Length: 463
Ligand code: NAD
Image 1: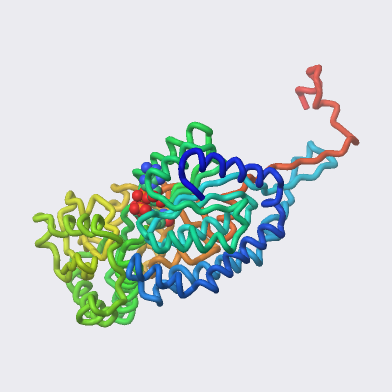
Image 2: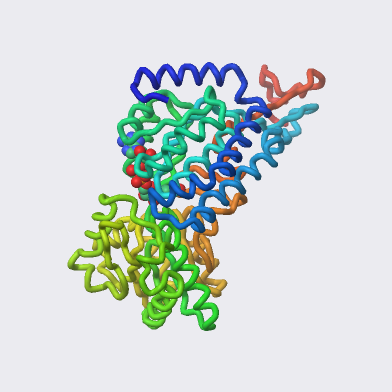
């Protein structure tokens, strides 16, 4: 797809015609596009892995776990469930509507735009695409310019598996994004920063376009002073893999910082040091199991967070940097100042501050005094604390004793709240996200209640 304004408008006109023809609503079309997506993943798995290695230094294992494998699962679920999702759902009407029936019928929204991010370039582009196509929409996808090899695969190879009259992929950066936002859409699904999310919402105002914003923020993980050593080990391993082992912390649901009781903090740091070495070796730079920082701009951003004189002395482990390889060694910080950028901005990298609290329950107030996060993690066996975390905090998700797990569950709605965004997807939630749930009611011409109609008399009102 070309990207001058005229070319975009011409293409979108054609796509609207395609949508109006009704083809994208047909079950067979939806199924064939989903199967096309599946073939793309199966046949191009090697190229996908290579592109992820090239753009982000992701290990093949990580590429399979977070993108290829997860997408295969999502596509298979969509193919298997499609007819069930598309079927109308029976509903009840009040008794006053005698001899009636009702149902909720999902209909596609029309022509939708998906703008995605670079950190999971396939997952964040194709996961919403699965929902949009399953729901019967015509779709334009704009992946991020910051993962160019992946965007190239998505814009040049993926279309050979799909019906290009109803699905188009356009490559480009902010300028192309802005041009696309000037168009009329029936839905915009955006994954990225709150800054650009605000632009998306302003643009959507013009046509009252519904919007989903998948944003980020600072996801906390509280770690209770677990008593059993096995529990401690399990918790630490899960924390480390979720932080350093998923795009090197460049993930919207990565643990941004840890909250722990003062009395447990040194033991926790010691355990983390041991397990970082176990997982990533004595010299993580040579292990190839930690992804690279996406580009020099983000590298410099992380470097300035870490080298802030106020923060520097809180580094208790790692943090060495190699700009030529865009590599940052896993870093642990203990109690950096709460007003430093590292504790006020989303980190999005392999740097993990630990903040100590007097009592683990104080974490609730700490979390509540900051913007609502996309996810909250809590490593604890304390059921009361678990209940309090659910009822007294607000976030897109809460996960106990693990992290990032919620992303791969098609049975859970994925998305944020407040500053971390709004609108949910994954599994059936994706289908619903791209559907209008139309209320349909039917009545028979027989029987009616006489008191339903004017003229109003005292008799009728007293009923
Ligand atoms: P970004 O907002 O800079 O870019 C996101 C997308 O918007 C890209 O495709 C980009 O080309 C496009 N874009 C940039 N400027 C634009 C403009 N002016 N008009 C229209 N489009 C524009 O964000 P990013 O750097 O790609 O991602 C990092 C942020 O995304 C982090 O905050 C992270 O937490 C968040 N994120 C959220 C999720 C989620 O699922 N909730 C997933 C990944 C990343």
